[in-house]
Image (cartoon, rainbow, N blue to C red):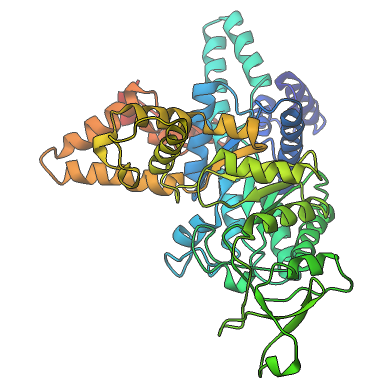
Length: 532
C-alpha cells in the first residue's frame, strides 16, 4: 500500500494540473478514499491472497508449527467480524483465513430454502458469497482507517504533532482485513466445462483457493453421510485441469487447488475406469471393485459386467441403481492412491475426509502418501459432524486400556454422559482436543485446520440463549446483560452498530462532497454517543 504522504503528493499535483477545475477536490480526502479502497477488483484480491497462501505453505514446509487456520462463514458480516476480532485479539491476521462451505451455502443461502449438502443449490450463490465476504472485509478496512484518519484530524487540531506522526505511521503500516478464502466448489457442479466456468466466476469474485472433491457431481453427498460415490481418476484430473486453466486464464498463477478425496467413506463408484494396460491408473482403480470370479460364460447373466482384475475375469457387483461396489476395507488404500494421483496431476493441497478426528489415522495415510510425494500437505476439516467430546474420551479410554489401567469406573459407550465431565479421563481428553491442531500439524502433515460450520452452530446457540431469557422471566435484561453489556465490557465494535454499518464513513463523505453544507448524522443527538 502506498504511503499516505505519497498519495497526497500525487493527488495534489493531479489537482493542480486541472488549472482550477478541481479546486473543490481536497487531495487529502481523495488520498483517504484511495487508501480505504486498496483492492479495485476481485482479481486484485485473488492475486494478493494467493501470494500470501503460497508464502504460508512455504513457511509450513520449513516449520510445521506454522500451520494456518480458518472458520467457515455464510455471510459477509460474519466474516468481517471474525477478522476484526482476530486483529483485535492477536494484532495481525497472519495465518488466519476464511472458509466458504458448500454445506452452509446449501443450508443457508439457497433460494430454494434450506437444502442438504447435495449440490442442489444455485451454483451462482457460491461466487456471490465470495464477493459478499470480500465486500465486508474491504468495508472493515475503510471502517478502521476512517477511525485513524479522524484521530489524525483531532491530533492536528490539538497541535499534537507527535500523535499525528504516530497515526500517520499506523496508516502507512495498516494491515488489511482481506485474507485468503478457501472456497468449496463441491464436485464442480457438472462436467469439467461447468467446473471451469464456475471456477472463473469464483476467482473473479476473489477466490485464490478452490477446493474440489472426487464425488460424482449429480450423486454428491455430505462428506459425513452415507451413499457417497466417487469418480475414476481421469474424470477428477480433468476437473483439476479445468480449475488450473481458470486460474491461468485470469492471471492468478499462484492460485491454489485443494483436491479432496471422499474415498475413505465412499463404497461406490458410478463408472468403471478406462484401462489400456495392466497397472495403469484405470486398472488400479478397477482393482478395488468388488466382484465374483467367473470361469465360464454361463456364469454371466443378463446385464452383468465383467472385467479383468489381477489377471482373472471378475463379475463386478452392481446395485439396482447401476452403481458399482468397492471391496470392503479398501478405503485407506484408495485414499492414498487418490492423493498421490492428485498431487502428481496439478493439485497443491489435499483434503482427506475422515469419520473421526484421529491424528494417528490421518498420519498413517499421509506417511504413505509422503513416500511418493514428500511435500504432501493437508487441509483438514475439524468438523462439527464429529462428536469431539465422545471421540477424544474414547481415544483416551483406548490408550489407557492398552496401558492396562483400571477402567472399571468408565463405560466406553457412555462417555458422553455428564457424570464423567469432572473425571481425570475427561480432563485428559480435553487436553488432547486442545492440542489436536498442533499435533496434527506436526505429526500428520496438516497445513490448514478449518471448522466448516461454526457460525451455523454459534448463531443457533446464541439465539437460543437470548430467546430463553427474553421471552422468559429475564425480559429485557436478557439482552442487556447477555448481549449489550458484554459488548461494552469486551470492547466489541458492534455495540456502536451505526458506526459499524458505515455511519461515520458516510458523514465524512458528506463533508467531502458538500463541504460546510453537509447534513451529518453523528451530532450530539446521536444515541451512539451513549457508548463513549
